[in-house]
Image (cartoon, rainbow, N blue to C red; front, top):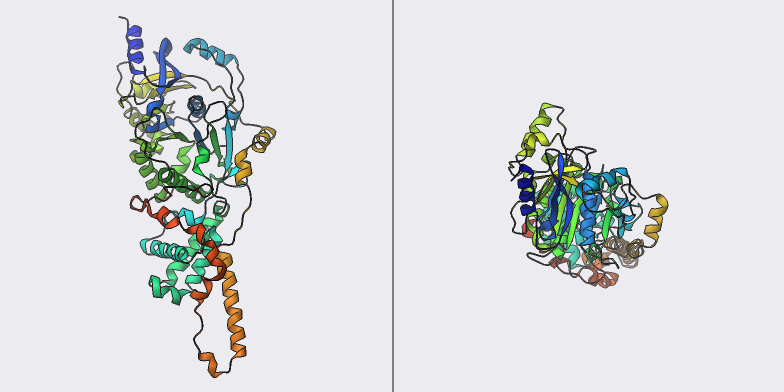
Amino acid sequence: MSKQEAFLQYINNGYTFKGEHFKLGCAMLDGEVVKGADVFLPLKTLNRHGLIAGATGTGKTKTLQVIAEGLSDASVPVLMMDIKGDLSGIAAAGTSNAKIEERYAKIGGSWTSAGYPVELLTLSHEKGARLRATVSEFGPVLLSKILELNDTQAGLVAMIFKYCDDNKLPLLDLKDFKKVLQFVSDEGKKELEKDYGKISTTSTGTILRKVIELEQQGATVFFGEKSFEVDDLMHIGDDGRGVISIVRVADIQDRPKLFSTFMLSLLAELYATLPEEGDMDKPKLVMFIDEAHLIFQEASDALLQQIETIVKLIRSKGVGIFFCTQNPMDVPPSVLGQLGLKVQHALRAFTANDRKTIKQTAENYPLSDYYKTDELLTQIGIGEALVTCLSEKGTPTPLAATMLTSPRSRMDILSDDEMEALVAKSKLVRKYNQEIDSDSAYEILTAKLEEAAEKSKEEEEAKPAKGRQKEEKGIFETIVTSSAARQAGRTAANIITRSLLGALGLGGRSSKKKGTSWF
């Protein structure tokens, strides 16, 4: 048996799967494509997470696009973090060219253009459905993590949430939280300390400053109503393909606090909401984070800890998380070790540190009799990559230098007019892009404090001097009566929600009522 025949058998044995799968490309030997050495990805193990890495310009984003298309074709919903703003073209059909024709002549098969069902989402005022969560639903654990509070300060935040739960004061946005924080450190301090313990003015001042810092990074637009429902990420299009939800975050990549806030709430909500599934034939949702090195470089310790925890646990919920980054060493080792699929594009060796990185990267891949991995990492071309994944049995597949298939959708962005048309027909935009400012803690406290002050003034004027020593209603009692009672339904489930995953340092809610879910 010749070397090429042995290689063909080697690849076919490693990449032949019984369950659903799709083609990623064709394996190469000595720089040449071996016809028939097809490299497939099994859907069954794509909830074991993955990594797409490589230097700038080597084709990482196109590989991400190919995998997202394969998942959508298999009726798997996809969520993509579009940090560079270059993924929207997946909604439009691509066009063929000489390079695509040449590629398919080598790897076999045929190329057909196709646009995919896409929903555009945004954290700011960009085009797309707005993603929001209320402060109350976000919970004290996650809020303390994102504000990077110490144990004493985190305990005070938990006390504030408990007080608001007990007294039907909905915390919808950051101005609600700030108002309650100011109240407990001033007018309401004495009343609260009777039931909830000592309140440190120093701690409340520190928390307030950190909330203001969060506001300066744009978090005001994230907290509020209407809360986004995780179920809206799980849609299947009318044609049976999975909907690809693209979160456009290009305008917040320089605001790590805001992005961390969103990521923490999203990961916690996915984990808390979805039921245990065990081993499934295909994932329920696959999430791609493009330019993930921007996240890891700027992420708080809380976000890193959260990602590590989620990556370890969320597989059992049927969710896969894929990181797309320039250098695999950008991903923390604790996370990297959990990634089943690895697609490694070329790396560049310009410095001694680059050569060290290449050597470390090569050691993360299975040994092969057919490749010198460290040398090959600098030699593979654009649209080519070293690939290994988990087989249906959970074992690593052979390392394959692969010429990848091309995206069927547009390898460019949508125009402004195309984006407007996509947003105009979106049901999610109509559902979530309404500005809602319900009566909440801010309005209730402000109104009642004014009412209490006015009432006190009138009574003082009406009573004789000696009668003014008579005991009046406390501020606490005044505030929690009247219209506050009407807010009971809005916060009734939050205590159970926020305590579900406390032991893991997570937030979220384990069950939903229609119209009251959150990220």
